[in-house]
Image (tube, rainbow, N blue to C red; front, side, top):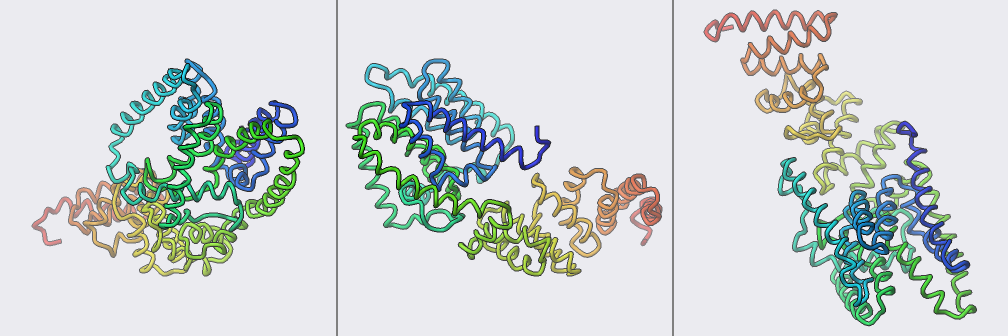
Length: 453
């Protein structure tokens, strides 16, 4: 609809958020309005509504919540829909089980069947794609041990939504936080055991969506407030229950709380008005965070390349995620090339595209740039694989074919060089140098290895 324009994605987030809030507002009159406000004005909701990449969190929250209230085929279909949006929906069967009374224990089985079907299809797809074991994102011993602390940190942001305006760093799961998480989860387990099924379901909606991003089921996921969208929906439903149980005067206590949340949210919205505001605030809050440095460097690259370069170098050196580290190295290479620092740029390009087979845009750009810029000076044996995969991704680039021909010539593979130069000349017939290279390589190929040429 939007043709890729950002406004369409932002409108999508707002529509989904409004639909969820509207569904809450239709329940129980004034209490429904209270629940809708809990969902909408909480400061942790700003990122989910403003950040277009958090749309899948909104989808999973809406569809996953509908799923745990549904039964039979409808519940299974909604579970599949939620799983199709985001893998955090793996907790839907567990939440459905919590909400099933003793008379409806089997009500959660359709959700479990949907999860099993999804897991089989996903496993088959991953196996067919040949994903390396190191890239499957499985949990580590450290991530499992730290998971209770991560859950506690997320819950703490729900209860006490203060702190830095842009939370880019993952929560620090130190020993104290891990112990606190274990105590909280133990108390929650006791409460779930004693609570009636509807309350168990709502408590499950608050806590269980945090488990998949805690490091217990997968490798640690970087902190993002968008993950709190689903727990906030559970908190809104929980507020309905608490509001019904409280005396009318006691409900008035929530008015200053909602007002305070609203003011905090208004203060956070400014950071999300554009990329420059977001990344400058993120870097100011976390100057040592490589992800914040990379984001701010991308913004500065156009307006102040000299200031962007040290930030990009910081990101490339400190980022633990290999793909993000390659993105940082690619940005370093771009900035160095713009300054005419060819030799330093080639070193950065080697880090940005160290091996063949990287299918991300930055990796492809780095392969092409490394092949073209390094064809005459870098090790031709190492470049051959890089150039080969670069050609597969950009078969219509005459400069790339010419560079690959130079690499083949330096490897004394004159027949391959002649073919590559000929492709370059065919793609750019007005480039006289390409035709001359093709003629020379053809002559070398015809003279044989014993010619001494």
